[in-house]
Length: 238
Ligand SMILES: [Zn+2]
Ligand SMILES: [Zn+2]
Image 1 (cartoon, protein in one colour):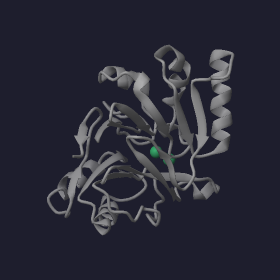
Image 2: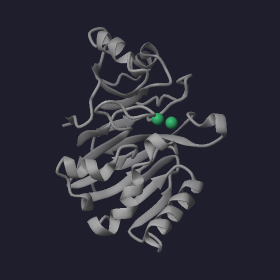
Image 3: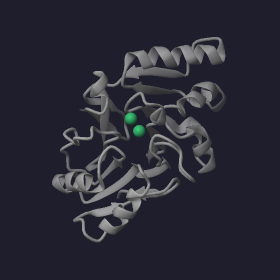
Image 4: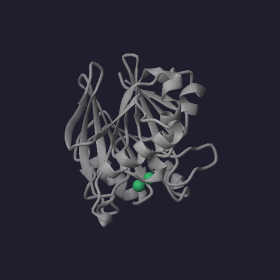
């Protein structure tokens, strides 16, 4: 399972950083987790074929996690993309279907919008994906999700955005956790990662960016491999 960071910024783009998007490639299939970055531009830049997208998963309906989806809808037919797009809210499905209608003057038939449900909601011959409800949007009584992605006996947890209390940090051990540091302190998130006994963590979506200095200093002290990837970096989990 290969993981490439297409966008590692928080709620606004940074220098050399798009907003959040993570690509997992496995068995010739491409899986997009959040689409804050211009997904199609990134796939082409890194030499992927957009037609290999097997599914897109949007953790919650904040712009920095979904705005890159618009080009996928616009160009799905051109690139031969046919895939499900999983969204966290039904109103998002209606909005994106309307947007597809606006762009194409017809229903976007290449993209099949579906609603995320807690527990395992996606499985194909390469990966299985569990959704874990988080409290990031609880202030508006709306759902948001973390994802646990399994490939054989390997797994990656992508927390996406969390509640400042961190009560919703998924209590799962994985081979890698990808999490954020915008709504919480570096110390608090590292304590949570440590509690899951996950051996490696990639922290993205960092704000303010001064927190990178703290995270860098913590790399020698935390009991797991702490990564702070930049856009384009790739990790392979063997
Ligand atoms: Zn965000
Ligand atoms: Zn958010």
